[in-house]
Each structure stands twice: as C-alpha cells, then as structure tokens.
Image 1 (cartoon, rainbow, N blue to C red):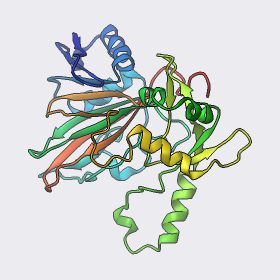
Image 2 (image 1 turned 45 degrees about the horizontal axis):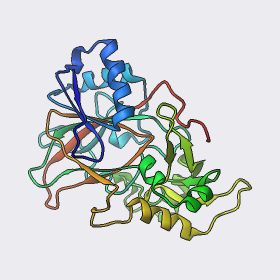
Image 3 (image 1 turned 135 degrees about the horizontal axis):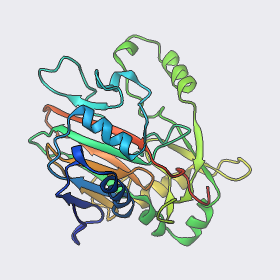
Length: 293
C-alpha cells in the first residue's frame, strides 16, 4: 500500500496498491490512522460490491444506518444511496448534500468516518468541496477564538430537510412538527480537540448550525455565526476561498474522510445527468468529541 499526500493540494492523499476486498486487519488499521493524518483518502481501483463496502465499514468500526429509509440501498440498508442509476429497480435520492455540512452533526452522536463509493460519475463537472475546520479555526482572530471556546452551537436538519414523496400535499406545519419530534435540535461543543490529532476543531456548518450559546445558556448575537461562516469560507459562492479544497474522483474510487474535522459540500453537474454514489458512515473507536468538549 502506498499513501501519497503530494504537495499541490490543501489536504488529502491518494492510496494505491491496496485491495480492500482482501485487506488485512493491519492494513485496515493503517488506513484508519491515515484518514486522521490526511483528512481525505482517495483509494484507487476498488470497485467494491455493496456487500464488500459494508464489510469494510464494519472493519473500520460500527456502522451508523441513516435514519431516513428512503436513502437505503434495498439489499443493504447500511448503504446511503445518493443519486439514481438508469435501469435499477430502486430510486436513490438525487442532488443530495448541496450545502456545507458535517454528516450527522444534527444528531446526538455523530460519527467519525465517512466513506463514499462513486457508482456513476457524470461527464460534466462533479466532485466534493471540503474545508478543514481545524485549519479554519486556527486562522480566526484570537479574540474570536477566545469567544467561541466554551460555547455550544445548536445543530438541526430543519434548514435543508429533503422532502420525501410521502410529504407531497402535507401541511407544512405537520412536516415541521415531525422534524422537531424525530430530530430535535442538539447542542454540541463549538470547539473541541480531535481525539487523535489533538487539534482544536471548529464544529460549525452553514447547513446545520443555528447559533451559539454561552456556558449559562444565553444566546450570542447572530452576527457572530455569520462572521464565523464567512471567515471559514462557507458563504463563498465562488468557491475560491483559500480554505476550500475540491476533491475529484472517478468510478472505482473510494473516498474516506475524517467527518470530525471536515465540512463538505457536493458539486453537482449543472446539466441533469445520471449520477450515483454509495455512502457508509462509521463510528470509530474514539469518542467523537475530544478534550475541551
């Protein structure tokens, strides 16, 4: 197995010479550690079957099955299906993730590792944008960092909830009430130390964050959240902010990333084209929030 981090990108490494369908426990452990040190791994030439993708997830930790069944692979509910594939007997969910987020941040127990296996990659432009929230936090002014330490941030899916076929014609107040019942807002540490690398992580996203509260539960001014999102690059619609990294991929690749430290946003082709990926999400052996939480 070769891990090449390169020198011409903000983050990430390319992995070659590894066959995940027959990887040893030692190789899987080495791969897991490489995720923490490189943030993103692009593992080439895999072409994993759905069953093999699930088995890899179990080798890395404990799989978290997504709470909305409409995203599930029909034979392997551990797999979250994004997009559609012509000729398949089931429908995936198109145009997912078109906003800055960390997977499952709106749940009480987020997970540490996300894996994505592209099944169909459009001919048009496609990829995933990432921001390293450890580096983004380190670049903030000292007074803003001091203000954020010790606060908690509200997370909820209510801003970008994906409407389901069963929601058509439902009164909006019923849908809003259901969102609040099934996924009530949670408050996570705004800043915590990564349990492996020790870096301070800023746990804030444009999609799921709704403001800060101090140690006494008092709300901070909403302008602070706007400033944080702007400074980290999440409000830049040109995607030229120096914090933003675009990761491209092709069919047969496997993307594995550190879901604690990164926020990401899908880049979809501007023209409607078939597109599909399989995602598996994993709780690793470390507590999600390290010291300072």
